[in-house]
Image (cartoon, rainbow, N blue to C red; front, side, top):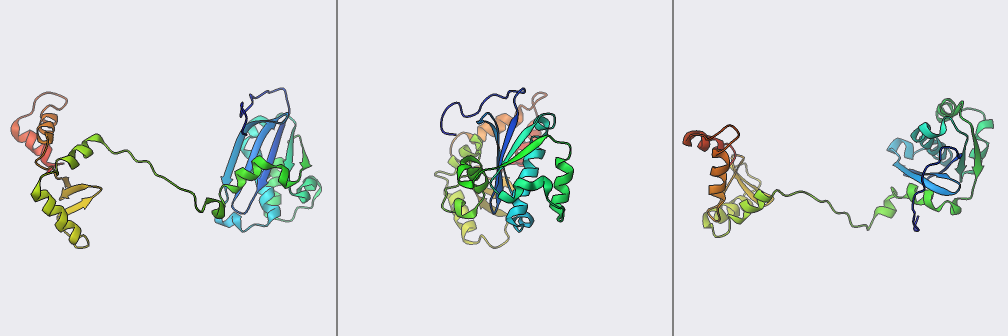
Length: 233
């Protein structure tokens, strides 16, 4: 996974290999041909499935990857590589559980064989299945990127030097838990839901110009005023 090219190109004339692995909270699968990876797939387990036994989780991983790549494998022979030894004899086992019954239906008619490989060798699938574990996630730095419209930044700039707006923001911050016509969040002051525009800058002119020239031509003064009033204060 660390050397280029990371993914190989698909060859429809070659058999496929599905390498699967499951951990406490997720499953990971690698689709490959001749030892070269074609695609990766990982999925977190629901709270209900997290309570399954190790055997059932590994079985579920097989069913998920067969379902995910059925459009490739349903007409060609393929190999399933697992690290849970009891699944090596999957086809010869008696059907007792619901997941075995579900698997019997999904796997019926497919041309495949199952090979066992020790878990420590399955580095890629182990990494894919383990990314959902809480102990792996803990300590990571998560960031959320949001889009801030440019006009909102300009609105904040109009508050600079406006003592009246500054006093209002301070008053709202002090009484933030009490119901009021005024609100302040994300750096924007609002009155009855309308965005408050300060005295600094040219935002007043820009807004009047914007609402005075809508699609369809010029508007009269009162129409322009009502349009601005609906959104700004």
